[in-house]
Image 1 (tube, rainbow, N blue to C red):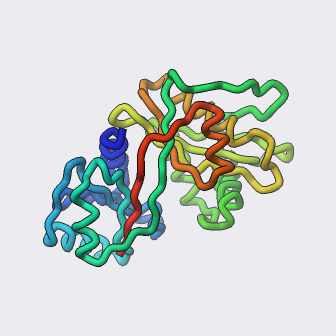
Image 2 (cartoon, helix red, strand yellow; image 1 turned 90 degrees about the vertical axis):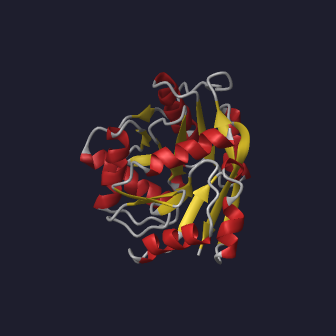
Length: 249
């Protein structure tokens, strides 16, 4: 599965507005933001970079005033981590990712519970962007650019789902990238604090996972932020799949 996830990471970064490929790496950039979680690189599957390759990658980031940063599945490119360490990169985190397939997906009964909707208006996307910002404690400030990125995700073959709050805004939401290499990444599952514990995360997760399966994905994968969220994902059919590595200079 690591090979599928790493192949997906490469294809997904190639969808960024600006792409640089050098020395076995693909770096994806979005000029609308300096966020390191949007602007980063990943190696090609099986890449074996030397010190010059890593130096060229670093220059691609420095030229844009950005911190050199990578996300990848290390088993899909085992020679990359040692090359990055030699250049002074350090590990930010190692995360286990979970995988769901059509055979493991378990759809709970949401009778009387939250219903995941498809955003249709600019107001919906702005509300989702603001709700996810609140859910992640302001890590991503809400902005017109953030709402536009959400719409771009939906318009480019991915999907966005949200649960509407009683006031008409967004109680919680998540996104999923367009499938590539047979898999898709579900990300940004967030619920506003006042609405937690009501099944919103499970509702949007199931809705997005089912959507990707209908579009031909053989699997959907995600990363979890804590044991509480892991239990939510495991209840709807996600299982441990492998490791993702985050490194920066």
